[in-house]
Image 1 (cartoon, chains in turn cyan, red):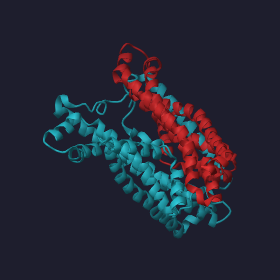
Image 2 (tube, chains in turn red, cyan):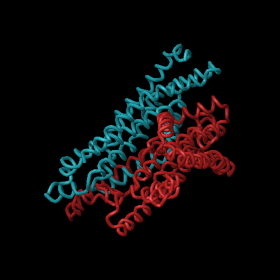
Image 3 (spheres, rainbow over the protein chains, first blue to last red):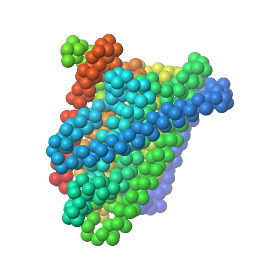
Image 4 (cartoon, one colour):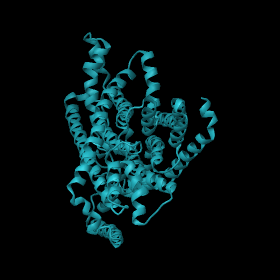
Amino acid sequence: MSQVLYDAPGPKALARSRVISWVVAVLVLGGLGFAIFQLSGQGLFDADRWDIFNDPLVWLDLLNALVTGTLAAAGLAAIGAIALGVVFSLLRSSTIKWVRIPTTVVLEFFRGMPVLLLILFILLVFGVPAFWSVVIALALYNGTIIGEALRAGLRALPKGQREAGLAVGMRPLQSRLLIEFPQAFRNMLPIIVAQLVVLLKDTSLGYIVGMTELVRRGRLTSEFFGAGQYAFSVYFVVVAMYLTVNLSVSFLARRLARRRGQRLDTGRLKEGGMGDQSAVGNAPIIGAADGAAGGDGSGTS
Amino acid sequence: MEVILDNLPLYLRGFGMTLYLLGLTVLFALPLGALVAALRISPVPSLRVVAAVYTEWLRNTPLTLVFFFIAFVLPRIGARLDYEIGAVVALTLYTAPFFAEAIRSGVNAVPVGQAEAARSIGLTFGQTLGNVILPQALRGVVPPLINVTIALTKNTSVATGFFVFTLVSTGQRLANQNGDQVIPILLGVAFFYLVITIPLGQFADRLEERVVVNR
């Protein structure tokens, strides 16, 4: 990591950095310990705050909400988003003006709106159930973002790809679909997967519009068992579930990114002077490409 | 259209709250993000670990859950925050890692040769960063920072579910009162969001082009 910025540390620097490391570790652990001590002073870690999790039904309930609420919505929306993304990217990179410009306007509109507003719009205007309005809104919104990523992927391809396609007598659309698009899709796969993590997280917006997903189920569970003494423990379990699912998907995204990077590197060697896929193979100043999940639209809730 | 003009004060109230959340969050999250970014590249391993854990944790947790913690769980452990302050805290905690990533990507956009050259003429870590990398990175950092700010603008809407009166609350309330005019009402809300996000996006795009030309 970031070896360009400083020399490999010598014995003195190593000792110093070790000391700082220990101090920080002690501070952080001390802080955590203090927090835990304070919390346990309020009985948060007593058995009677956690005993509901002895009941398998509670687990079944939460897992059921995770699978049939959160994951089902995310899965359906992901399929929709990728399909829409493909269509949007093709429309937006069309050579025909009266296709490209209206699509651009519509996409900009969707991209500039909060997902929650989109969900409400579909919920109130079309009167579909909460679950489906979440699915449709997420598919639309993430479809525009994936579409943008794919368009960027199309644009980043060497010009020769299209020229070659046209030169062998393909029609423009044929060259798009058969030659350029598969490459763009593969190049952008890490960004698409990262966006799917965002989509998965955004299903929690369903909580606000009354869809039964993990967050709402958690709240109902803790309220069902009493006046809030389970709020912390249930929250803890819900967060753990989200982190497990999301970190696995993020991990997948990172692995895809790494595999992609390797393939580009070897590809460059073979292609010789052709590689104008700059930057991808260059070592960044800071750290490895674990920024996969930090791609374009991922700031979105 | 009529319904929007009639209820303009309500729209402006929601708009004001959205701007308030946006402004305060940027004010707090930007320094925090810069700090996290600095920690992530520091030579001390434990600092890097702390920053990485924070970033990964928050980036893989839905914003709704962060809000949920501040609004429903914190009061149970004895720290009740005002809902609006709580919203700013939640948004700040959530947005800071994204700012940090934006800063990191800006720094990464500086060619490695710059850092190597600075190192090879004997500049220290601090000098390399302060005199060579950051001044160049700053230009590249602004567009991604703006993109995060745009996302933040949209994210302020999540506060709706946690007792803060945002633009979306305006839409919700008006739509409940005037069931026959839901479409214009919600389009009005969308308009107010676009008033913030589209100019910011245009600005980012233009800056991006200029940065590219410069290099």
